[in-house]
Image (tube, rainbow, N blue to C red; front, side):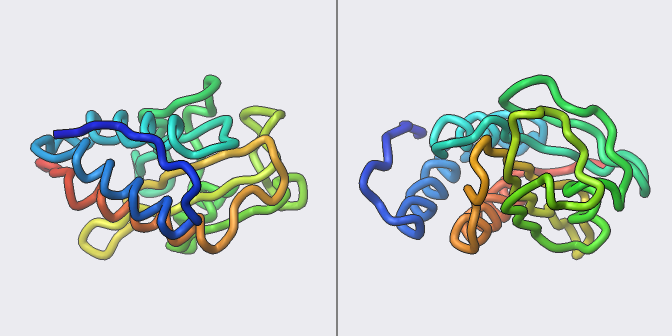
Length: 165
C-alpha cells in the first residue's frame, strides 16, 4: 500500500532510492499507462524540490510528441521529434540535462519562468515511446545524480505499465 512520506535530509542517491520505493508502492497493482503517468508526475512534482513542471510526452506519430499527464502550468501540446529538449531527447534516444535553457539551441519556451530542464526518454522493446520532462525555475538545478535518479523512476514507470496494442 502506498503511503507518501517526506524524504528529508537524504543525499540525492538516497532520496531517489526512497522516491523509487514510494513510486513502486504507488503504482503497485495498477497497469494503466495514463493513470500511472498521472500519479508518477504528481509524485515527482510533490517530492522533488525546485520544480515548476513535471510530466510526460508520448510519441503520437513517428515524428511528433503529444502532451501527457503533468503537473504545473499549461504546456505545449505537440512537439516535433528533433525540436526542443524533449524532441531532441527522443531523436537521440538519450537523457538530456540542460543547465540553462536559454543556451539550448531551439529550446521551446512553454513557461518563460523555466531556466533548466531534465528530459529522460522512456523505452519499450528497445524503442523510445515518450519522455519524462522536468523543468525548474533555477539555472543548473539538475545534475548527473538527478539524471540517474529520474532514469530509475522512468524504468519503474515503464515496468509497472502495460500497453495493449
